[in-house]
Image (cartoon, rainbow, N blue to C red; front, side, top):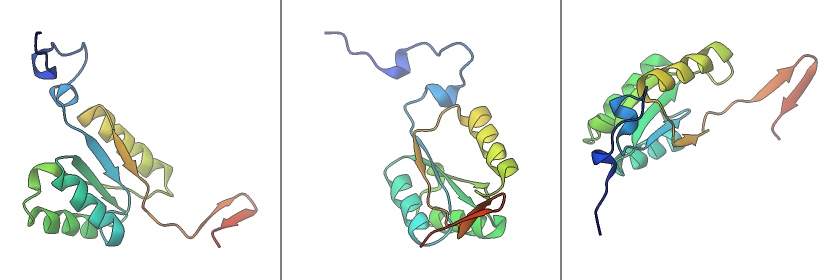
Length: 125
Protein backbone atom coordinates (compact mmCIF):
# COMPACT_ATOMS: atom_id res chain seq x y z
CA UNK A 1 0.00 0.00 0.00
CA UNK A 2 1.42 3.35 -1.05
CA UNK A 3 1.84 5.92 1.72
CA UNK A 4 0.54 9.33 0.65
CA UNK A 5 0.96 12.62 2.45
CA UNK A 6 -0.05 16.23 1.94
CA UNK A 7 3.63 17.15 1.62
CA UNK A 8 3.95 15.09 -1.59
CA UNK A 9 0.75 16.46 -3.14
CA UNK A 10 1.09 19.34 -5.59
CA UNK A 11 -0.26 22.67 -4.32
CA UNK A 12 -3.66 23.73 -5.57
CA UNK A 13 -3.79 26.55 -8.12
CA UNK A 14 -3.80 29.93 -6.46
CA UNK A 15 -2.87 28.56 -3.04
CA UNK A 16 -0.01 29.70 -0.86
CA UNK A 17 2.59 27.48 0.75
CA UNK A 18 1.09 28.14 4.18
CA UNK A 19 -2.39 27.03 3.12
CA UNK A 20 -1.16 23.71 1.71
CA UNK A 21 0.76 22.72 4.85
CA UNK A 22 -0.85 20.48 7.44
CA UNK A 23 -1.09 23.35 9.93
CA UNK A 24 -4.26 24.23 11.81
CA UNK A 25 -5.07 27.88 12.39
CA UNK A 26 -7.16 29.38 15.18
CA UNK A 27 -8.45 32.84 16.03
CA UNK A 28 -9.16 33.62 19.68
CA UNK A 29 -11.07 36.84 20.29
CA UNK A 30 -10.25 38.53 23.58
CA UNK A 31 -7.09 36.46 23.86
CA UNK A 32 -5.02 38.95 25.81
CA UNK A 33 -6.17 37.91 29.30
CA UNK A 34 -8.11 35.42 31.38
CA UNK A 35 -9.76 32.45 29.72
CA UNK A 36 -8.86 33.68 26.23
CA UNK A 37 -5.17 33.88 27.14
CA UNK A 38 -5.23 30.33 28.51
CA UNK A 39 -7.04 29.07 25.40
CA UNK A 40 -4.30 30.65 23.26
CA UNK A 41 -1.61 29.02 25.40
CA UNK A 42 -3.17 25.57 25.20
CA UNK A 43 -3.90 25.72 21.45
CA UNK A 44 -0.36 26.91 20.68
CA UNK A 45 1.14 24.23 22.93
CA UNK A 46 -0.72 21.65 20.82
CA UNK A 47 0.99 22.95 17.67
CA UNK A 48 -1.93 25.03 16.41
CA UNK A 49 -1.01 28.41 14.94
CA UNK A 50 -2.97 31.00 16.96
CA UNK A 51 -3.99 34.51 16.03
CA UNK A 52 -4.52 36.19 19.39
CA UNK A 53 -6.85 39.17 19.05
CA UNK A 54 -7.62 42.05 21.37
CA UNK A 55 -9.07 45.55 21.09
CA UNK A 56 -6.01 47.13 22.67
CA UNK A 57 -2.87 46.64 20.57
CA UNK A 58 -0.45 47.23 23.44
CA UNK A 59 -2.15 44.60 25.62
CA UNK A 60 -2.38 42.21 22.70
CA UNK A 61 1.33 42.43 21.90
CA UNK A 62 2.17 42.09 25.61
CA UNK A 63 0.09 38.90 25.77
CA UNK A 64 1.85 37.46 22.71
CA UNK A 65 5.25 38.33 24.23
CA UNK A 66 4.29 36.59 27.47
CA UNK A 67 3.16 33.48 25.60
CA UNK A 68 6.36 33.52 23.52
CA UNK A 69 8.34 33.47 26.78
CA UNK A 70 6.76 30.01 27.31
CA UNK A 71 8.49 28.83 24.12
CA UNK A 72 5.45 29.09 21.84
CA UNK A 73 6.88 31.70 19.45
CA UNK A 74 6.37 29.70 16.25
CA UNK A 75 2.65 29.32 16.88
CA UNK A 76 1.52 32.84 17.83
CA UNK A 77 0.68 36.10 16.15
CA UNK A 78 -1.39 39.14 17.08
CA UNK A 79 -4.05 41.03 15.16
CA UNK A 80 -6.07 43.91 16.55
CA UNK A 81 -9.81 43.20 16.66
CA UNK A 82 -12.80 45.02 18.07
CA UNK A 83 -15.72 42.61 17.61
CA UNK A 84 -18.17 45.53 17.68
CA UNK A 85 -16.47 47.32 14.75
CA UNK A 86 -17.22 45.99 11.27
CA UNK A 87 -14.09 47.62 9.78
CA UNK A 88 -11.96 45.83 12.38
CA UNK A 89 -13.67 42.52 11.59
CA UNK A 90 -13.12 43.08 7.85
CA UNK A 91 -9.43 43.80 8.51
CA UNK A 92 -8.99 40.50 10.35
CA UNK A 93 -10.87 38.59 7.63
CA UNK A 94 -8.65 40.17 4.96
CA UNK A 95 -5.52 39.25 6.93
CA UNK A 96 -6.65 35.63 7.26
CA UNK A 97 -7.53 35.41 3.55
CA UNK A 98 -4.31 36.98 2.29
CA UNK A 99 -1.76 35.61 4.76
CA UNK A 100 -3.12 32.19 5.75
CA UNK A 101 -5.90 31.19 3.40
CA UNK A 102 -7.99 29.23 5.89
CA UNK A 103 -9.31 29.14 9.43
CA UNK A 104 -9.89 25.89 11.30
CA UNK A 105 -10.90 27.09 14.78
CA UNK A 106 -12.73 30.22 15.93
CA UNK A 107 -13.05 30.88 19.66
CA UNK A 108 -15.48 33.75 20.30
CA UNK A 109 -14.24 34.75 23.74
CA UNK A 110 -14.42 38.56 23.57
CA UNK A 111 -16.98 39.94 25.96
CA UNK A 112 -19.43 42.67 25.07
CA UNK A 113 -22.02 44.09 27.45
CA UNK A 114 -24.79 44.45 24.90
CA UNK A 115 -25.62 45.49 21.37
CA UNK A 116 -27.96 48.10 20.01
CA UNK A 117 -29.94 47.69 16.80
CA UNK A 118 -31.61 50.99 16.10
CA UNK A 119 -33.77 51.73 19.12
CA UNK A 120 -33.82 48.15 20.42
CA UNK A 121 -31.19 47.27 23.00
CA UNK A 122 -30.16 43.68 23.70
CA UNK A 123 -28.53 42.87 27.04
CA UNK A 124 -27.20 39.69 28.56
CA UNK A 125 -28.79 38.95 31.90
